[in-house]
Image (cartoon, rainbow, N blue to C red; front, side):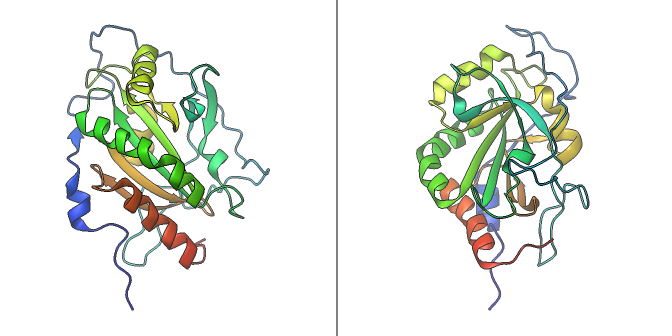
Length: 232
């Protein structure tokens, strides 16, 4: 019996995506300066010391039974579990690489901007289901790519304000003006959602816009991993 796609066309269109219409690198005045976003050198191994895969890297998602690309090992400064008191920590996608599924099964990544109302609504939905999805094997990571202007930020204050406004409980990374996710993953709209199989770091699904049901969206990724062998 043929399985349905990871997400239906109805759900793919349910959340409107707002284009980062102006050039991501263009300067713009704002209330606070951009976060001083350093270039980090990734460790390049999983938490268990397994080297992160470097073959078949790209941005293509799985489609019609054809495996997707592996996501590049991007590194960010992040508030782990949105814990501001602990300060910013280096986080890389290799932290989620888990071939033996000891900690996670699926990684859900969302790229957002603090000016984006759809991003805000999805964030509230994610907060409500995060603990439940974590127990089921999902890791949740959000990446803030802009502040209160399309071509500005985020500033550190805007990120901290976003955490407070949403009572965030997931890991929140910073990618000023989307310079990493735009070049690596082709993300030009927010919100942008991805599902990644942590056994191989294969991109299972990638879409502009918010799913109508965050829990159902992530559970489709969990179902795939639970029912199928690794694609690599």
